[in-house]
Length: 125
Length: 110
Image 1 (tube, rainbow over the protein chains, first blue to last red):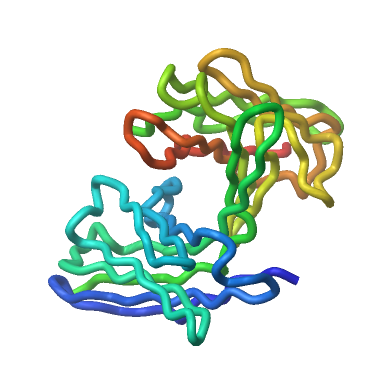
Image 2: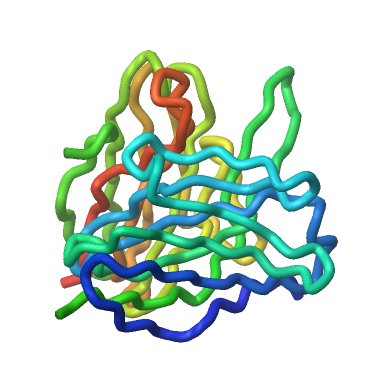
């Protein structure tokens, strides 16, 4: 079955960077965009951006521009999300998710399914 | 402040029905398909409804979705205890050129 497995929890100091990995299985890695969404403790979901594993093209949410870098390694079929300049506000669970697209009734639609299990990143001095 | 507005909480008793609203704007819901995600306590979100009203396989027909103008709704009938979760709407925003989520609605089954 299709699943995305993420790397383990991280504890970082303010100002540091963190790199989270997402390993999909059960489908062709280059056939679907991978998105990253984070969730601060007790808060809602916040879209960070996405990567096209086929060509490495990326799209980042404006609030993370300049701090986030999404990459992939097609040889080992893994996607990465690196966030720099960490502050306590970056303490959150980070999820990756596969995008699926469909064209029906004259329009495209997209959704995220499945999601990874999440990676807790704690930023603390 | 989320781009999409959802009620923070809704509740109902077993067997009852509830509706969760998601209010957006001309740059998102009015133009693009809405998806809904269910997040059970301590777990990752799961796709519950896609393209406004399509249920993934395995999702009971007690769940239904709709969209009209700049708003969307998720209806749940015959509430069960296992429906207790957080529910999020999501849609692509053409002005922001990015995905936006509602703030989430916590469903409590009394």
